[in-house]
Length: 323
Ligand code: GLU
Image (cartoon, rainbow, N blue to C red; front, side):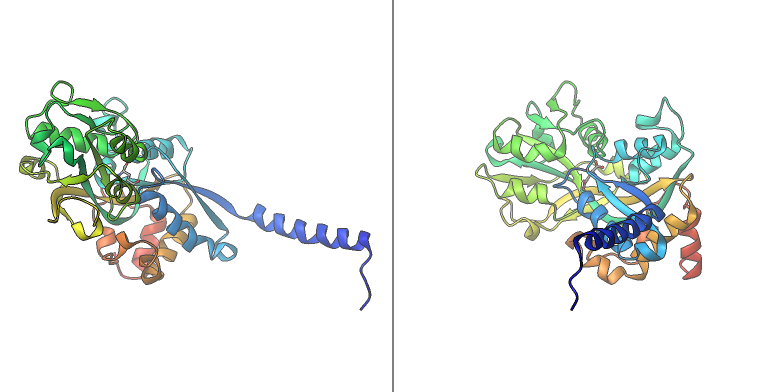
């Protein structure tokens, strides 16, 4: 075989590289905003991106994932055009659509669009065993992380505390750390408990229940008034077998919401269509990508949405008879 001369090798390399970049230039890059890397949003974004990127030549869409501060941050970043997609708690989607909670001053976020919903999230109250907290009511006077302002869980924690008569500004020592820091802070005895609204199992709760400081995942009871008042809250139970390191041996009683994928009305239909189609057409494969997805059904993934469906998602749902 004839040896290639050095200039020829450089030339062929240049040709290969330029074809590669031409294809890249033909792709539309989209970013999916998630949450902390030890939550479930981050691997969920990764799973969606993985499905879509397999067909990047066909669809011309290339998705990447960004770790963020959580639901509230994601909605605001989608509205600002800094993210194309974001994973968002169903309650936060409702509040943004209706211009309440964090959106009271800005008003309804009318360009927010729903794509589909994903896993169940439980409001998870992790406590140090040595702090003697059996249920939410025992949090009085304790150091409690309620979550950073961009997170979904902060309002869930405030709602739950308020429902049981605890004023988070007076009756507890409320902290505003990110969920990704909470496990370490609890292990270092800098907090006694933290709230995290998260799918199960999650890396963060596995981490904190495997540490030296023993941990109880406490029940959140006495919050029925919340379920009556707010349409987006439902009863939830966390199977304790998912966290064998926890000190409690019973499933945890709590309440929860759903994780949903959101976008903006400004995102072209074909991009949203491609993402919806890839996840739904290959749902059985998608479900293997995280244990929190194990109970998903196509029908269940159309519930918990309060923003209008994006027309790209609607097109797919109509095609397959889901709408
Ligand atoms: N539900 C949390 C939030 O909205 C994020 C949970 C996760 O990252 O899995 O901030």
